[in-house]
Length: 321
Image (tube, rainbow, N blue to C red; front, top):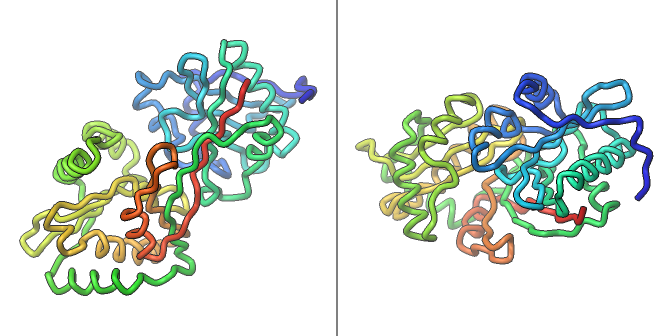
């Protein structure tokens, strides 16, 4: 593709531009709080930053490109669930996106990169149509690298819980459990870590120290909701990321006692109502995949579907630079 890019230019991000970056994220039509520098940079030691800022011919900032580089591969963004171009309220349009894409590709080629991994923001997080980047991927011959299916409830018109899930709710009510918001992440993190190790030989993406750091930086966006029995003992919980119009379940876990009474079902029946009352549009229960989407956890996705959730996809594209 040949385009004249003389009307636009890019500037590599530097820490001195943090305030400009964060202000733009706040006004963007497709960004969420995880694209603020306070979130992106907490693990900069593991994911060295290589982000860009796109300006138009009048030197107005119109888009951001959160990125990291590993070897000869640039990723947008290796340390985040999604990244991709962060677009201004009205610009860039499709033509400017194609021009900015070429500038971006030329910049990373000059740095020795030969591959781009691109994770666009899923459409439910967009505040206004923002898929100019998907068109640019097509125009630049990008191919699909991975597809993760996530389960989402449309809170404006949710499907009902199925019969089995409704039975679970009644059973939990008879036991006398309670749901509340908690500031004490440590007990839940112990339970979560034990469950992931027991079930998958894995551990949470964030350590306890990291999630507490991020919660302290973004107290309005990161919440822990728990289920407890009549004695106050923890049975289940979920860490929620509040992203504009979307409530995203980032972590979900229960212990043996919680699983026996299906405490997670009770928890999400409560969260669904609270999210509706507070005006959120979607409840995203997260992907149920492994191996870049080629392996589907049938039990996990069936549980989410029992709440009335249905699928959207988290895409990753690969482009040769």
